[in-house]
Image (cartoon, rainbow, N blue to C red; front, side, top):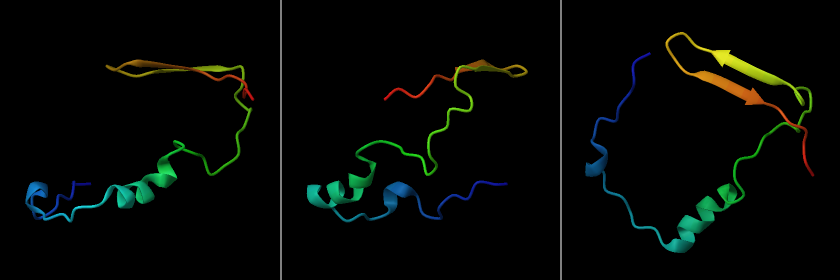
Length: 68
């Protein structure tokens, strides 16, 4: 699928200046970091997974139990 680039270059688009309060109100949802829509699961707790790619990196994951 081809990448759709904007017809106008980004540095040529006129932006309005936002106040710090406007920026803060828009970023408030991201203040606590990423969240998940689904509840935490311990299905993979205590297991590890290794993904070996052809001509690429080896990815290793270790799943731990949820710590409260």
